[in-house]
Amino acid sequence: MVLIAIGHIRDGSGIDTFRTIWMVEDNWIGFLTFTAVLTFMLVLGLIFRIKEQRKEKRELEELQAKYRGKSTE
View 1 (spheres, one colour):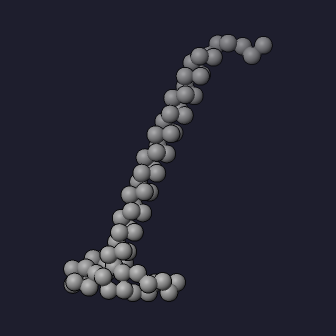
View 2: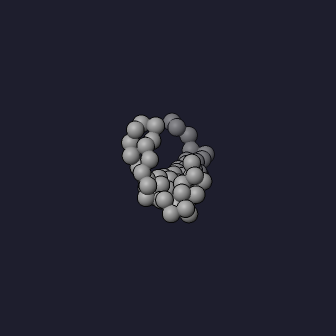
View 3: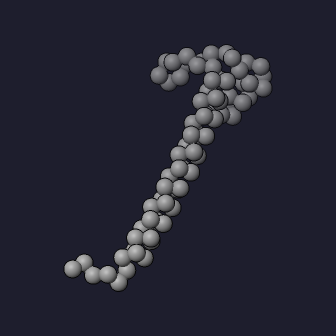
């Protein structure tokens, strides 16, 4: 569908409206904008998730190093 949208924009009909499966009117430029923003946000979320996992791993290693060799009694 992205390739179809790019083709319509190259043909000069990027602002022509179409109906989606849910009968919502949209245009091809709006669809490409939505796709670009969605992709950017998914990548950004993945970056935040990876950073959080690294932080949790580092904190766990610090705690293990701090309490290594100490008994729980």
